[in-house]
Length: 334
Image (cartoon, rainbow, N blue to C red; front, top):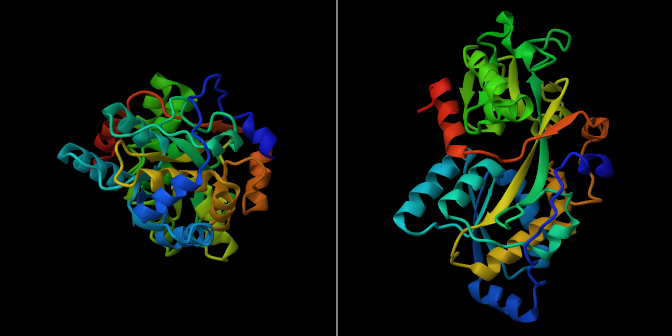
């Protein structure tokens, strides 16, 4: 599985100098710092799995976890950066906002020695971010409200008249726009999103909240939805199921260190642990799909979809703030 999925990620021919592995002196510095502040889109319940594993390996490190949806994190980091100091040491988000932070000069560079174990291309060649997990964007549906046979099977199906007002989407990330631009090109992707935005989409903040409302019967379907969260609820026998599109968008979640962090040694150690075998297994236990070679996903159905190879990986390109503005303006998000 991992060999096939690795081919989907862009290869890079140049990497910055790798940082040295943590020495006793560096670990002592982490102990002096005592904590690291993490702004992340990972929910509290998912973070507990990761934090437990981190505590077992580094009991002296306190990870101050601050959960923020992607959009709220972007707004908070921008506000703090303009005020002169980002209060986090490490950011966990999708690559697009991190690309924007990189362009604004808000990130520092750090290439973990663990990066060499990731799938090719799952990191920034300039050293500003590292991938930690992947996810696939699929159609989620409530089988009590709509049958599998009637659910949309492709992105173009989303545009059909019978689905107007029936589709929910996470308003905090612009993947319905950036994913389609990546897949079909700027002109066709923009044209598609213009049509999609006219479908009276139900706008919800955050992936988890979007699925919970669907399971509760607020709407029958959610689109461009993370398969990891859908599959986890399905395995818990919630009224949730999912369908891949004819070509499925694959995204990556990333971590980055801010420029001049308050706890630099602890920030580097946290990133190292994210990419380590122990950290990646903990993320898998939390229902994530790891990017480290040799660490499997938590679901056989997801593995089978990955093995199928009909995926399109969305990596950051262009101007994030431009796409986010188009996305928000088109959907009426304020």
